[in-house]
Length: 287
Ligand SMILES: [Zn+2]
Image (tube, rainbow, N blue to C red; front, side, top):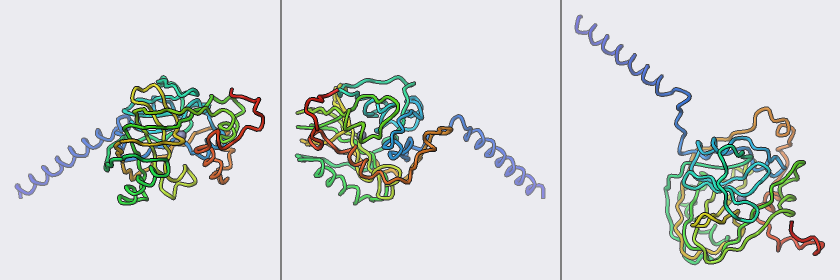
């Protein structure tokens, strides 16, 4: 009997110890972020409808990922997150490193842990690039998220950024048609950071690929419109979880009709170049 009591006491003691350890381990202020999740700020649909107010700070965004894409308050340039640094490609395609207090209306980031790698050689355009990446995605599972980093030589790449918008904000495709600035880079080394969203994400983001680019010397970049890849390595991070944060206490956001079909407007915003929209009045010029 004595032996049994002793064993029981030991078990109780072990359990108490484990309980107190797990209490300490789950202290809310020290939650370790899940590296295997895509963290998204707001919706591409809310951005497309002109919700450009920042929702979280750059400083907070960095606690949710070291790699990703997005934009800044007022659509003040294109965001590239690479190696834990948030870069801002402003309207003329030059790169700034914004302060942690800068705010973000839309972004996707993750902690990058590559699962799959492929080498790319002489890829002639965006469609061919997506075809090759889709092959890797399909082999691994098309219904997951993927963050990709493509580092190498680019014979030609067309990137765009845009002028910061002022209130009242126009919808994104309208703002970009007026204030997008394109930049053709040739024979340049750098990294494309891209996000793949699976087919069920049509109401919260855009399905398929979305790429931003930054040069190796970290001086130029933007949202990728067209690309030729010379020789590059693509690293894909398959990501099975998704975390969404929405603005709290934001009346403008609550007034938006997010059931509106924004697919065409988003497609225009992501792909249109100046060649697609011939100016009605040649005297208008650039801003
Ligand atoms: Zn973009």
